[in-house]
Image 1 (cartoon, protein in one colour):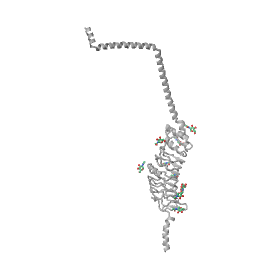
Image 2 (cartoon, rainbow, N blue to C red):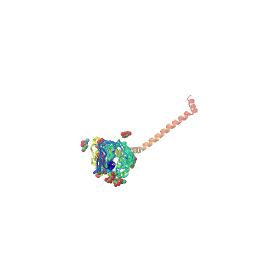
Image 3 (cartoon, protein in one colour):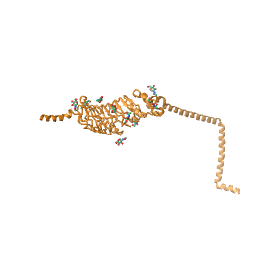
Image 4 (cartoon, rainbow, N blue to C red):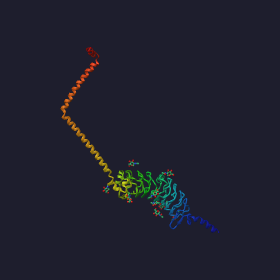
Length: 367
Ligand SMILES: *[C@@H]1O[C@H](CO)[C@@H](O)[C@H](O)[C@H]1NC(C)=O
Ligand SMILES: *[C@@H]1O[C@H](CO)[C@@H](O)[C@H](O)[C@H]1NC(C)=O
Ligand SMILES: *[C@@H]1O[C@H](CO)[C@@H](O)[C@H](O)[C@H]1NC(C)=O
Ligand SMILES: *[C@@H]1O[C@H](CO)[C@@H](O)[C@H](O)[C@H]1NC(C)=O
Ligand SMILES: *[C@@H]1O[C@H](CO)[C@@H](O)[C@H](O)[C@H]1NC(C)=O
Ligand SMILES: *[C@@H]1O[C@H](CO)[C@@H](O)[C@H](O)[C@H]1NC(C)=O
Ligand SMILES: *[C@@H]1O[C@H](CO)[C@@H](O)[C@H](O)[C@H]1NC(C)=O
Ligand SMILES: *[C@@H]1O[C@H](CO)[C@@H](O)[C@H](O)[C@H]1NC(C)=O
Ligand SMILES: *[C@@H]1O[C@H](CO)[C@@H](O)[C@H](O)[C@H]1NC(C)=O
């Protein structure tokens, strides 16, 4: 009887640790894998066995994770929480996962991301998937803060695709110095500003497909040139082939070896240029610099011509003056004499008019 009771107590204590599997989950000790897939779970289940290396809690209704969610799961290397409704990630939520290498938070609604949400006691994380994970584009600010406070110096791959991002805060990746692969495809980025990509010295692949890039400005090109070892993907952007695209087209020609899809990049606008290769647009169709140069040349030519004509007219004038020098001299003397006569006449009248006695004399004389 006592033996039986002891066994009961013993089994009750050990049961959850060894034999059990959380309700609505499938556990395989041989595969060290636990799956709780599409089971309407509202929170991370308790009682996940300690042997678990691969943990999939996907397609449920989980709305938040916190520091208690993954306690004692130090063997987990792969954790997927994709397709839930996680809107809040508290500080140190994943800190107990000492061997975590891959974290998949894709297809969630992250709005509240605490600054220390991505701190790990052991810099073991290699892959972070945040594809379609942000609630809206404003969430990127909180994400940027948590990435800057994170301890993910060993992260190799970050997926931020499908998030409707319209901009990236500066220095957002500056703590991810081991990052090799960065996916930013299917967002709404319009430019790559200064210091957006700073700190990514080791980057090998940057995917910017399906964004809203109309061209890449000199600033953007400088930023991309700060990652000399990264292969780039730029396809499916609404490139607009007006003269502003020329620096980009020239850069593209120069950097063809690292733009993986350089030959597939085509103009989307204007309609007349649609489907024209940007590599060709730079050299053949646009010709903006040549046109400017031609206009400049025409302008300069017209100025020079005007100068010559004016100079010629001036010369003829001087020549005519020279030929007529005698006549002119005579005319000048004549004029001077005429003026003198007029002047003296005027002077005389003026003096007579202004002297009352003289006028008196003349009136008297008239009488
Ligand atoms: C992790 O796995 C090892 C070996 O499989 C095991 O000895 C250890 O108890 C596990 N850790 C936990 C917390 O269960
Ligand atoms: C850190 O992670 C490595 C494997 O990535 C593991 O061998 C080591 O034990 C971990 N450190 C701690 C303190 O658990
Ligand atoms: C676990 O993650 C690694 C990458 O860190 C990956 O290569 C591996 O396939 C994943 N395992 C499972 C079972 O998903
Ligand atoms: C991230 O998750 C999405 C959706 O689950 C998947 O399509 C994508 O391949 C994942 N990214 C990486 C780098 O594994
Ligand atoms: C994002 O969601 C928050 C919270 O609902 C809201 O305050 C903010 O205005 C939203 N931002 C955008 C760009 O929709
Ligand atoms: C791009 O992302 C949106 C969600 O942000 C999604 O609805 C759409 O299917 C994605 N497009 C592609 C081509 O992946
Ligand atoms: C970007 O950097 C250049 C020089 O490197 C500077 O002239 C420009 O003002 C900067 N732009 C911004 C938005 O900081
Ligand atoms: C552009 O090219 C694609 C594939 O090469 C083709 O399917 C599409 O019809 C073309 N569009 C126009 C407007 O020529
Ligand atoms: C493009 O590059 C090639 C050599 O790589 C060069 O011959 C050609 O002139 C360049 N085109 C332009 C417009 O610079």
